[in-house]
Amino acid sequence: MKSNYTTYLLTASVSLVCLATARAVTQDELSESYDYVVVGGGTGGMALGNRLSEDPSKTVLVIEAGPVDSGEKEIMIPRYYVGANGPYMGEKFNWNASTTPQEALGGRQIVFTQGKLIGGGSALNAMVYDRGRASDYDSWSALNNPGWDFNGLLPFFKKAETFTPPPDDQVAEFGVTWNPECHGTDGPVQSSYCRYVYPQHNNFMDAMKSLGVPQPVDQSCGDTLGAYLTTHSIHPTNQSRSFGRTAWYDPSIERQNLHVLIDTQVTKLVTNQDGDDVTISGVEFASSADAKRRTVKVSKEAILSAGALRSPHLLMLSGIGEKAQLDRHGIKTVVNIPGVGQNLQDHAIGSFAMSFDQSLEKASDLEDPEFDALQGEEYYESRTGRWTDGLPASLAFIPYLNFTSDPDTVLDAMNASLAVDYLPNGTDSTVIAGYVAQVNHIIDMHRARSTAGQELMYLNGGQLFVTILLHPLSRGTVKLASAEPFDYPLVDPRYLSHPSDTKLYVDALKYDRKIIATDAMKKTSAKEIFPGADVTEDDALGAIVAGGLSTVWHPAGTCAMMPEELGGVVDSQLKVYGVKNLRVVDASVVPLIQAAHMQATVYAIAEKASYSYYGLFEIMTY
Image 1 (cartoon, rainbow, N blue to C red):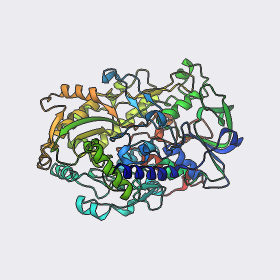
Image 2: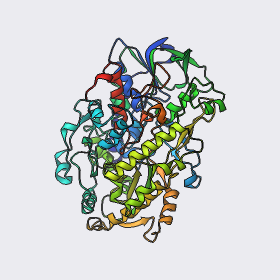
Image 3: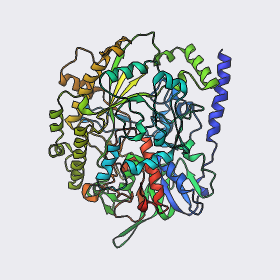
Image 4: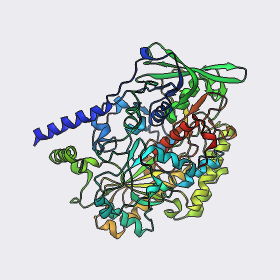
C-alpha cells in the first residue's frame, strides 16, 4: 500500500507543479516604462494585471514581493491548507508579521498571516467563496460612493466566477440549493462545493432551523442570512485551490504586453509636484534591504494592490498620509491625507469547543497515518474522500438581535456619539466623522436585522464552533515603524477596544449553548468543553473571549473609499485624493467591512476597477 501511495503522491505532485510553469521576468528584462504599474500581485493585483493586459496596446507591469508557488500541496490540496490538519508553509509564502501588543487581550500579539506570493491571501486562505448581504454593499454606496451598492457590484462578482452546482448526491443528502441567475459561468475563478461534507452538517442545519434560522436559497444573491453549505474557490474537477495564480496569472503570463516581476519589494512611489498637481512618475523597488534600488517609469497610472496593511504603508513611505506621522519619521509630506492607515477593521474570532460521539466522522481521524494514507490514495485516484475537506463548509450568518437577550441595551451601547470615545487618542476630526457615519450604518443594519452580527462556523465534524464578529466597532491603525521600507509597519487592530464587541462574543457563546441543547445536536452527544458549562457570568465569559481571541485575517479599510471630510483616502473611482494618476485596488478601500469573507469581494472590486480603464466606469447603469 505504501509504495502505491508514494506513486500517487509523486504523480499528483508533478501534475500540480505543471500548473505553475509560467515564467516571470527578471529585473534586467524590464522595460524602461509601462502604461500601468500594479504594486502587488495578490488577490486584487493579479486580477487587475490580467484584465488591464487584455488590451494588447497597453503595457502592464505587476510587481510582487513574493515568489510564484510551485503547486505545493499545502497550497493546492484542501486537506493541507493553513487552518486544516497539515503543516503550514508560513515563512516561505507569508510576510510573517504580528500585531502590536493588544491591550484588551492582555498584551498578546496576534500572528497576522498575509500572503507574500502571486495570489496573495487567495493562496493561503480557507477558500470560502461568499458575498456579503446586499445591505453591506448598499452601505458603501450610502457613504457617498455611487455605483458601489450590491446591484452595482453583482455583475463584477459574476464576471470573476465560474460556478459549478453541487453534485446530485450532495443535493439529495444535504438539500443544497442555489440560483444560477446570481452566478457567473465563464470567469477565471472556480466556485464549487467541497466534494466531502461531514454527515453532521445535517445535524447543524436541523439545529439552526429549530432556533428559527432559515436556509437561504443562495447566499450569492444578496440574502446571506441563515445557515447553509458554502461554496469554495475549489476547482470542481480536480478538487484543488483556484486562486490568483491559477485564475489570473497562468492564463495571462505569456502576453507580450504583461510583465510580472516577483521576489521584489516596492520601496516607494516616485512623485512629481508641479504647483498643486501631484503625479506618480515612477515606482522604486529592490529585491532586498541591501540590494540596489531601481525605478521603472509610469506613463499612465500606478495602482496600489498591496493589501490593507502594505498599501497604506507604501503611501506613507511616499509622502502621502498624515503630516504629523510623516514628520516624525523625516518623510516629506507630498499630500496630507489623515485617513491613510486609519479605519483598520478586521474579522476576529472566538471559539467554543465540544466533545461528541467519537464514532462519528471527524477531522482528527486523519491523525491515523494509515487512514490518512488511504484517503490520500482516494484523493489522487478519484478526487473524492476526506482530503477534499479541511475547510469551513457549514456556516450560519445570524443577525445580532436574533442571539442577544437584550436588544435595546445592545443598540444603546453602540451609540455613535459615545463610540468615538473608544477611538485612538489624537484621531483626526475627519476620521472621527467617517467613523460616526459607519457606526450609524451598523446600528441601522442591526436594528433592521438586515445584516449578520456573527458568522458561526461548524468545524471539524462538530468539534468546534467558531464565531466571527462581522461588524466590529473597534477600529485600529497601520503606522510607520520607521522610514525604512523593509521594516514592516506597526499593525494595531485594537481588538475589543469597543466594549460592544466583547458583548457580542459573550452573547454568541451563550447562543452556542442553545445550539448544542437542541434535539438535533443531542443526537451527536455534543457536550461543551470550552469555555465550560460552569462559566456563566458575563465578566468571566468576556475574560475568556479576550484570552483566546484571534483572527481570520480579513484586514480592510485603511485606504477607505469615502469623502475626504469623512477620513477617506480614495474617491469612488478609487483614485487617491490629491494625486492625478494613482489608485488603490484592494481590501484597503473597503469603507465598512462586509459580513462575508474577503476574496470574492476583492475580486469584484478589481473587476469593477478594470472597467474604469476602458472608460466605462462613469456610464455603467447596473
